[in-house]
Length: 123
Image 1 (cartoon, rainbow, N blue to C red):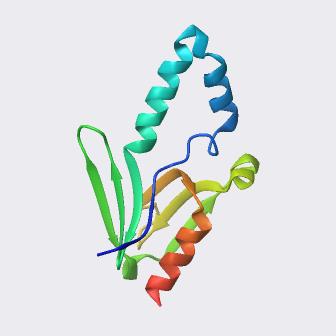
Image 2 (cartoon, rainbow, N blue to C red):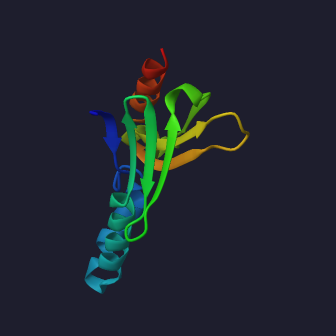
């Protein structure tokens, strides 16, 4: 099945000031460590729409996979700070029947595209 949306969290666009600070600290080797950990966290998280399923995969060595049927999704909430809006990233929260989000993924690029794809899959 072909993915309609498959993205990892954005590093620079999600937290530009943290990224710049980490780059400035590279000569002290602290910045390299911060960037490596941050990069691994971003690459070990993936939010994807596969046909009628939304899948969140997290983890590098041990994996956690959360799958939701598109028909069971009631709300897709997007939170964006000022900088998030400038760099077109945001936190995507997916709600089903409960009060708490089933899936929450921070730093996702183009969150409004994700929401529109979920709506289109529900139609």
